[in-house]
Image 1: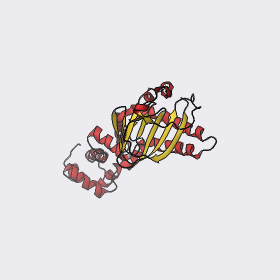
Image 2: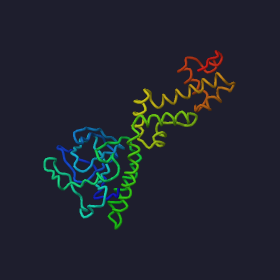
Image 3: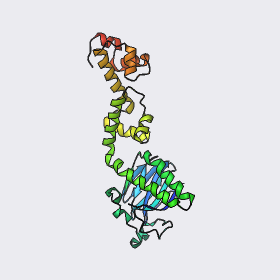
Image 4: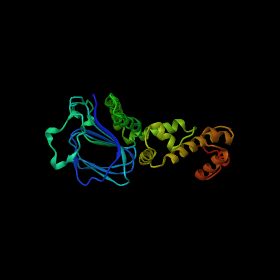
Length: 273
């Protein structure tokens, strides 16, 4: 893989009433807005921090809902065609000339880039792809080389995240919560740890576990608290702090609401959660 960036920009996108095909490979990274993109007959939704990739020759159309703003990168996986330095605009699908297609994706060394894909919750790419476009747009002597290096770095990051899938991500989040339940845990904080948009991370976790991130954290904390109440003489306030509640009153209210009795009553009855 030896990326050549032919064009990059940060812009909005007008409605596209017909399918087009591109002669080189494309990244669209959504910064804001929402809508749908159809690639080779498959429709995908997009939202902030969605990466859309399609190799040369893919037929696509973009249907914005809330006006999107995105980073676009037109590139090759090799530098065999640097003699075609200027932008190659997409053309209507029926006017496409197959002989002009630059099939550089076939030699990139990563099978993932052979076919189109959409990667949701890809906030880990926001900074690097935005910086790549900014470097390209500055137009200095070495701007293309710097932009290419950043896009190549993004291409190295993508396969592992794509292969992990939602189930793997959900398992990693659950493991992290179980290991860190005593600390400050929020959806926003978890999104920073795992480099995914909070909305996407929350949806993946809810779909995978059947409960929200907040509910899962609460369940873990209450389970640990019930074990400590039954097995130790520690004061309720200390147990509250050990399992991550901000104060004893908040802990007691949550415990009563979820367990049907106060922590003190739970301990006196000798329950083992």
